Image (cartoon, rainbow, N blue to C red; front, side, top):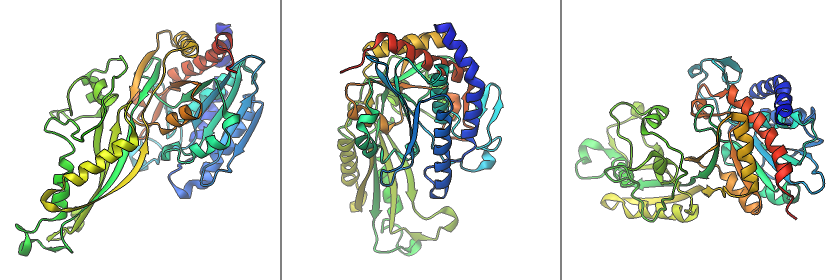
Length: 452
């Protein structure tokens, strides 16, 4: 059976690869209001592809106020067999300056065993992986399957909760496979088992009624930008540890993460010290991080010889599994208010949050997944953490608390450069991911029963 499925996946891969390239060509940037037509066009193409030998029922749902179109494809479960929800998203990050890419960001190009293009790894490869697995089973998998492909993940899935509430029964599943992560390195199958959350605030500092001459008043009157810089500096101690009181530190998965490799992947310049202490996994998977995302102040090119009356910044916390995003955001806001220098007036606006999450790695469904991915890749699965937030994971877990959750890579790895220029997909691992998912559907049919 395994060899037959492997052959079946390899037979459909050329058509799936062509479908993936067609998806990449659509600039479905959910953050850009001007791209709304392309976002819908990508949803329509996704639905069309699942109608082509992958699913028995396919429709586009767009009746949640403010939401982007969601593609729902399904195959009914044979009696007594479990149902699997397969998730991916068709929206992508903005490409940025096309001149910074080696080729057009929305023109797929293969080079060195990788497929380049915006969305190639994040996450149109997830759509293609689901297509391959279902087509390999001839559109009649041995378990029930519901495919959900959304179009707003890159802006935080703001209407996903409302969508899950409205279609809770139709999306109900025993196992949820979220194909939107990456392998720890090329050729190594990896499940993401922990995710940090996020808590953001915008802080504004005011010191003067209005900007005034820096020569006439400088030396006694404090400017807001200097006060803001001093305030932001209190977010870390001298060694780079986050200095906001009350944040949680968790325990990371056991996968190793050498500091030299981290420096190379992050592009840390020679001589620049890393923040904090302990292992890299402890710092980026299981500990908090504080980042100044942006500052509003006079630009260098437009600077005048004046003391700035007000300045503001957006500050982001990444919070560890086991912490609570709302409580952490309140702690950040309190820290910013309490550390105002020189009596500066500080106003804090609490902004976006997303909850951290830790996957339960026990149970027959996870065991089945480990077998399937190990057979497809020829090596054991590695559990790793995710430093970034994937807000929809906690929402799925809250909506379906009895479901086993699996966070997989459709072929992405650290070299994929997701969200950056020259994003790419490692094609060898993409093929293995397609085989693994097809095998997983068979493994679940044999070893997991539908939960009544």
